Structures are given as C-alpha cells and as structure tokens.
Length: 162
Image (cartoon, rainbow, N blue to C red; front, side, top):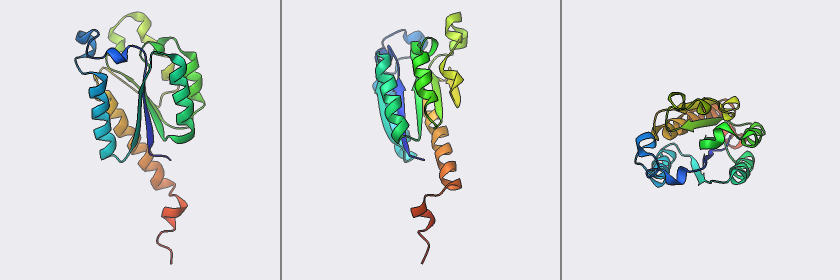
C-alpha cells in the first residue's frame, strides 16, 4: 500500500480562520496544512494537500489518488450533504477514506446531519477542530503500516535472502 495520502478540502475552507470563527476557529487552512505536513513527515507519509470550491476538482483529485495513494482524508464541507458524485468517486477507490468535520455537525442545523460521504468512509471525525485531520493521518498511517506488515513487498521480503 502506498504511503501517499491525499488531504482534500471542500468549499469555503479557503476562508478558514476568517469565516465564522466561533464555529470553525481561528486557524487558517495554511495552518492546518503546516500541521498536517509535520505529522506526515513524522509518519513517513507523502502528503498531497488540496482545497477547492469546485466539485469536479475534488473528484479529479480522488481519481488521481485512486492510482497512486494509500488513502484519502477528506473534509468535503458543504459537499458532504449534496455530492453523490464525490461519493461515487470514493466508491471507485479501494483504500481507506477518513471524513473530517471541524465542527460537530450533529449539533448544527438538521440538513448537516446527513452525509453522503459517510456511506463510504472508513471513519468519521467530527467536532475535534482541526486536530481531526491529525487524528485521521495517524489512523491512516497505522492502517498502511498494518497492511505493509501483513503484505510485505517482494523487495522487502527478499532483502534477507542470500
């Protein structure tokens, strides 16, 4: 399993730290990316970090990840509640997917309680602020490591051979 991980962010997350800080906090998306990169380096993960307000770009990144990645961490933002297309793209992938929400969506408006993405997610983290990204990266690295232990690559398996 690849150690490449995609962290994908949906609409309006480019305004993180400025938009409704009482809900989403004062950290910017650049702050989140910086923390994710630190944790990824510690876990020996290669990180691809993206944000878009356009659904098709997120789908294109999922398709790209399908060919190269060991997993996806996604904060689909408002697309959580509307995008069957993102769900379909994730359903075409065989790796773990972690859905992230900065706020606890279940304490908010009723329409936010339904997630199309959760139907595919390996795990969902909501209400942990931006720390949810770091938790998801740690869990994903754990799953990648477990997969590598149970399915060693031929080059690693044969490295002790004479």
